[in-house]
Image 1 (tube, rainbow, N blue to C red):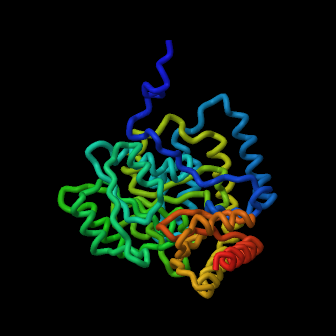
Image 2: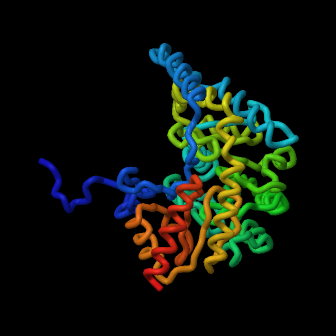
Image 3: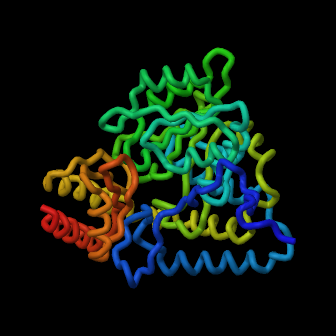
Length: 376
C-alpha cells in the first residue's frame, strides 16, 4: 500500500524541499529571436570544424562497446597545450583535470575538499551555483560582500578568509554576474590567507570567461608555480563556442588532480566527449576568432548604456550588468515582449545582458529604448 501524499513523499532531504532547480529560462528561438541571457558565443563553428568533430565522433562511436580512457590522456595533453599559450609558466598534462562542464569540475572540488565540518567562502554578488555546490556537499557556506563597484575589498576579504578558515575559496574572475576581473595581487593575497597557520585551504579562480578579459589583464595561471593551493578553472562553453559540448577543466598542482580522482565517477567523460573536445581544440584559433569582435561589441555596449544614463559595471566578460531599475522584472518582461531575452540576475535593481552579434545588439538597444520610453 502506497504512503499518503502528505507523508513526506518522495523522501527528499529536508533542506532541499521546496527549492526550485537552477536554470535560466529556455524559450524556442522562433518565439524569442534574440536570446542574450546565458552568455553563449553567438558564432558557431565553421564547416571544416564541424566536419572534423563529426569524424572524431564517428571514430569514437566505433569503440563504444569499450569503456573510454578513464584518464583522458589525449584530452589532458590538448588542454595543457592550449593553456600553455596563455601563460609563460606553461601547464603540464598532469596539472590538468576535466569534467562535464565547469559545473562538474566545481562540484568535484567541493566533494574532495569541502564536506561536513568544512567551509566554502566567496564574495557576493557571485555565481549563483556556488552556494548550491556547497549545499549539495554539506559544506558550510559563507558569503562576504564586494565593494559598491563590485571590486573585491582585499583587506576585508583577507580578514574573512582568516576568520572563517575555509577549506575552499571561490573567486570568479571575471566575476559572474558583474564581469569584474581580479588583479593578480588579490589572488596571491588570498592564496596566502587560505594557507595561513595550520589551515590548508584551496583558492579556486573560476576563469569561465577568462578569454574575454581586456588587454593587459593577466590570467591567474601565471601564479600557479608560486601557490600550490591555487586552482584555475576554465570552460569550453563560452569563448570556445562549445556550450553544447559540456567540457570544463582546471589547472592545478598534480596532487590536487590526484585528489579529485577519489570522488570522480567511473569513466565520467565519455569517449565521444573526449574525441569531440580534442577535435575542437585543434580548431582553437578559429573558434576563438570572434573573441576580439565580441570584446569590441561589449565595450561599445558599455559606452552606449552609460550614455543612455544607466549604471554599468566594468566588464572583462562577454556580458554586461546594468541598472538601476525600480522594477527590473517589468523591464525584463518588456524586453521579452519585444523578442529580446536577457537575464534577471545579480543584485536587486540590475539586469545582465550577454554580448551577441551586431544585429542582436542593435535589436537589444532598440527594445530597451522602447521599454524605457514606455515607462518614462
